Amino acid sequence: MADVLEINGLCKRFGSKQALGGVTLSVPERCVFGFVGRNGAGKTTTMKSIIGLLKPDGGEITVCGERVAYGGTKTNRFIGYLPDVPEFYGYMTAREYMSLCGRAAGMKSSDIKARTDELLELVGLSDEKHRIKGYSRGMKQRLGIAQALINRPKLLICDEPTSALDPVGRREILDILKDAGKQTSVFFSTHILTDVERICDRVAFLEGGKVALSGDIDEIRKKRSDTAVEVLPEKPSDAALLAEQFPSGEVRDGCFTLKNASAQDAEDLMKCILAKHISVVRFERREPDLENMFMEVIGE
Image (cartoon, rainbow, N blue to C red; front, side):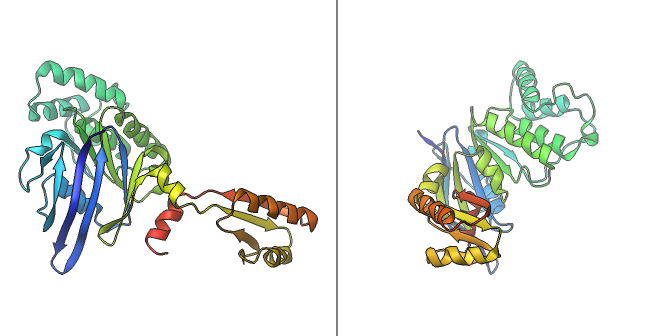
């Protein structure tokens, strides 16, 4: 499978501050790719570099095999872009705005109409007749995705598309992005790890201006296995008793945790609980998740 986006050694400074210190990653075709980092980690700087709005101090970016040039728009014919705070002409309706975007992209009138019908249906705005100035934040985000897809881009870039939405709005946007990923590559930045776990095929963690960890989500989980078993006894003293039997475990707030626990470890722990007649409120085997991996990456 070919890579739609390739970034090699991307560097960028703003005065004395190093925003990016050698970012390297690639996004394959028809992939939903999560670009994860804390606020201020350099996610937006990376995205603006991809679309030629910022001039890198070093490194190279290619989109569909063509090199991105600062200030040039040649590679942008492959890209659809949704900024973190999209702006619209409030006096227009959704269809009028989509028509404007289609004409700006050089599309034929018949193609614009067909594509507008298709995309407004996809984002749930096909029956919306009101002007954009009356739209909620979630509706604007949905319209923003529709306009970014108008010219059938090979790469859809979304900067923090769910950060300011309520749970219902977030779910709607994620469902739309997942659907879009069947036809194009979706590259979206976020600091909301549950969003990544829900829809992404691949992920990259940005920390200290560099990619600290990247790859297929399932493969990363296997490589960085940190399965733990947690036991919360009714009596706090029983947690200490379990720690005596399993010295590699730890006790915190009356809860006993055995990290890097195998299936056999979990079975042995259960046998000990039964043999010692320990009453348990909770016995849980916790699989590694993105939050644990991210906290490990940023050193917290």
